[in-house]
Image (tube, rainbow over all chains, first blue to last red; front, side):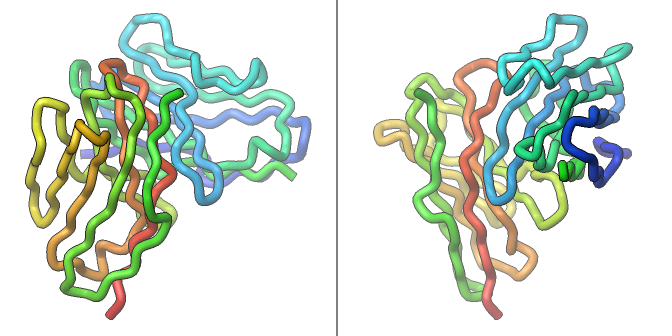
Length: 113
Length: 111
């Protein structure tokens, strides 16, 4: 079956612009995670959605970062007024309820010039 | 605070040899651990997991060992193949859904 998909695969933007990153989770998965991975680094947790519960936003680095999940499926991560330090790979993962295994998408590579 | 780290950032092994990738964690409340494999340009891929009530778990060519006394986790890959070349991450959680990932170890398989 289809896995987690993310778009765009690559995004180049200018400092100060806003960007939107999209994640399509595996159908039926109620959990959705966003992570950031800087070059040569591990994964940094950003935000977690589970069903209709309030999201866990504890990992968002600043108020320039926000995420939504519409209809319990597709999620959008928005970064406002991008900074060069926002350059990274943004990974999305989804999972089944009560199962901690996460299935990752290929990521969006963001470069802020 | 919480931390998950790896002893070696890079590991080179001969094809056919066994590989051992290590991970240390500091959160004594961690009760679930996962190893992921990340190939270049791709997202992490689940390899194997283990719960804190176990010391060892085996999969196909992979074994995860958990030593809760010293807070140490290892991934053993038997008969390493060129396709095993990747970055390997350990991740842990203490009961919630927020995972802490280590920085990763790059495994290079030499012909």
